[in-house]
Length: 307
Image (cartoon, rainbow, N blue to C red):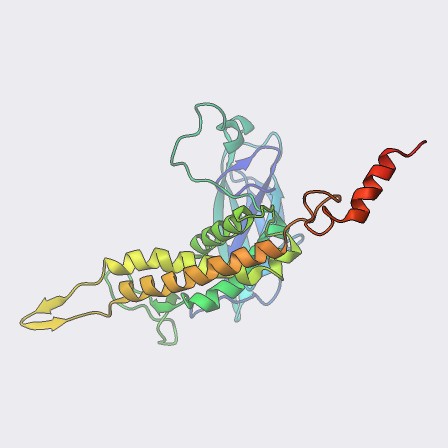
């Protein structure tokens, strides 16, 4: 797995990404595949300008995996990107830090090196990320938490593009990291509800058959989380004898998720009860055959069989 540009380790790969936007702030693809060149900490060109191995991950999002030499100079390196968007030639530069393996994240783990409260990185596999994206595509429309608002500068004034249109920025109730946390909690509850299972987001059953119950669990967790925030906003605004009472969203969300929670738990138990593992042989695990005289007699006959 490639390192992020914050920590490029000698002898390992680093992921260099860039996101292209048009004049209105919307994601857009360049006319052709963008090119890049790389300079080391001494401003010496180590990679000539090229578009080879530049991968397109999404609209306007490109990545280049650079193999840092084992004897690379330490310090800040520079990756310069070249692209053409709507007739304009763009040249953008970024930096990434090259460090030794001893000072990388892998060398800072161990007894006494990890502190309580440190951020945790979930190293999902590509198959798990694909399953998470499927659940996210179902969860986001259900929550309707995605939104945009006019962008403001440091003085609080609205920002306009070159055509006089307002530039909008994302204003989501839940970001992707929070939604993924809710999905992980939902999957954990799905697996820990008897009978116990060990599904992951990479399993096709989670991506298809059980995606509804996983998304429903994350939906309940999201409503419960937001109801606490909205409860703190339920107050009356008074100014000059005029009072305004905002909608009591906290009470509404609390009653809404309480209703969904009971039905979600019943449905979850019903699903898990129907995928219970079957008995491995005839015996006490089978209520039908454990007392059947024919099977009981057959068991005794087999025990007396002469081999």
